[in-house]
Amino acid sequence: MQIRLATRTLRLRQPLRTAHGTTTERHSVEIAISDQGLVGHGEAAPLPGFGLESFDDALHSLQEWANDHHKFPTSPAARSAALAALDDLADAKTNKVKPPASVLVQALVGATDLEGMKEEIQAAVRHGYKGIKLKVGSTDPETDYRRICEAIELTHASTTLRLDANGGWSAEEAMSVLRPIESRFVDLIEEPTSNPSDWQKIADTTGLLLAADENLVNEKQVEGLLMNAAVGALILKPSILGGASGTRSIAELAAENKLRVIISSFLDGPIALRAARDLAIELAPKEIHGLGTAGLFVERFPKDVTPDQGYLHRS
Ligand SMILES: [Mg+2]
Image 1 (cartoon, helix red, strand yellow):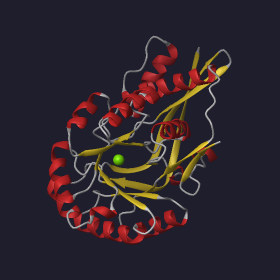
Image 2: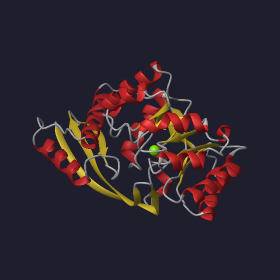
Image 3: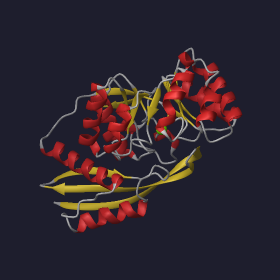
């Protein structure tokens, strides 16, 4: 078995501002494991602000593994990428054929100014997206309230609207922004504050469905989130949750607890997006997933991970 690594930089067309800061480019390590003439691919791209290892740490631990196969990476992004590459190799070895399928993905809207946001939403609706996720929590609450009202205006007739605060609000800010919003116009909100113990109060006050994302960076946290009655959905990122097998086991627990599961990427490159797309098709084929990010990059992504009328297609 041979492990080869390559680093890659992907540039965003426009800086993406979230409560964790501004992202302008993504650095990834692409893994190719070859054995018996077959190759498995994986990709690690830790995103700052999510409690993960740094890019340099991920690269270092993957290099150690490439040099000594007994040194399997232990940090979340590197470990998940290594597991994904091994999964992919195992699929290649068993000659497993994945049938053609399509899955809905959402457009990510990050512009903080009202005009820019309107243009992004209108473009997404025009391009056929059935779901839009609006980033909130990185500007002042007053502006966020106006942005959400405008987003509802533009989407309510045709398109599912989701919000993601990335934990950027206090409980008071979350409630002041969300209380006047009619819950039927918003499908869910991810991470209204960074502390899940705030969430019951927020759910009761606003009537919105709450989703956990940053609070779900390892399997150990699942138990706590399942006990939290305010959580209605889990955003699962295979690229940090241990690849396909780690994601499947959390999805099973979610199903037992009647929680929705949405598969998401980390503004990932093509390899991680493809693996996440396949899990989305397998685990939640009717949901709209957080995998519609290819168009945000300057670099052109392969067709099978680039949204087409709001879908990713596996041919
Ligand atoms: Mg999120």
